[in-house]
Length: 445
Image 1: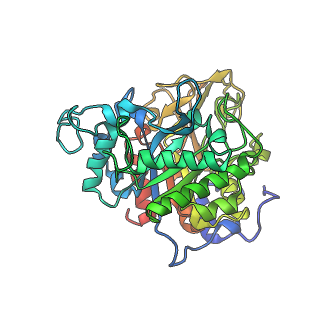
Image 2: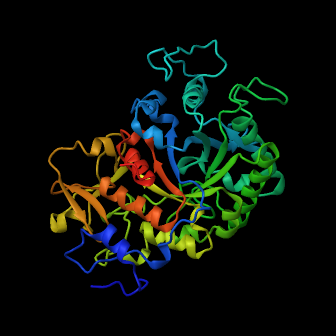
Image 3: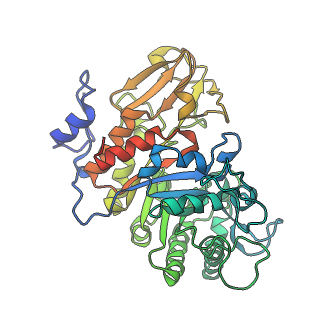
């Protein structure tokens, strides 16, 4: 069985290294366009991971937990999620700019000596507390680690269209974000110019507009001109960041589906940002009833949704063909699973119709990798075409990226000359998969 659409002339190296487990089938392979060797001038590989403000709540995940994990040694960049983009006033009026996503978690929570990353208590007398203070303490012992604040996200992208609408709105929005997160003016009582208590903590900004010129979460403001305005917004960020320090980083989180990525001016964006974090996950989710892999590496001819092109390789290929250099692409890897229930036993649940999302520990159809691998009563299965694993107990299906998938994806990064990998998000894992990716990319196993 062959893929009629696939590029011929596939290399023995990729077929042997990536797909040796597919011996029962005619081996699918990576398109030749994705197989390239990184040049000596290629930028150093990135290992990016998101740290969320809300991880401290239900999951009890703090900076101290991160500091204790071996994965930390490989991280080049932590993206802190999320800063808000919204009007100045609670009634939706006023200029749109940046605000703290969760002031208590970000800058207000005190820490006992036992909770603190460096063993030093932090109380209300200190001007900076919360995650920001703990990340600053972490950075003291890891000075090469970059901290970048991410803006927006699925639940925080409502106002991006308004913020990007005019030259004046873009200038105002960008200045507010730089004042808050780069100049560190986190104290609402601070007036005038000058640096605030969080100055120097963040060395860049990541924009996570979900999605440009498309609704994303219900209620988002959407305009056709968002496509052009997003590029202009990024250029304004680059201009104002460069005016402070050209080494300040600017990145974006970008979508996998072709209808969403087609609404981005990708060549212009690639010239403006340091790199693009591909959200190569959630390609299938609980909005659908059919159980499928949410982060499949390669397409399977057995996939009923095959025509959608929802795989990692096809996403990367689209971005490359659109004019984005491989060295500007960072490959997203999930540390969580998507699940469905009410499935028949046919094909062990794969590609079958469910009655709805599976119940998760924290939310429907979602399970942390660290919890998923402890589930009892499930059989683990492997699909050699898509290079993906799943768990099935006769009625409930969970798709996951385990060690095999992570190794395959890091191989794609190396052979394809991509910039690196990105993980969503650190509280979902005990550091095992991030550590594995770091070792694979470094060659130190």
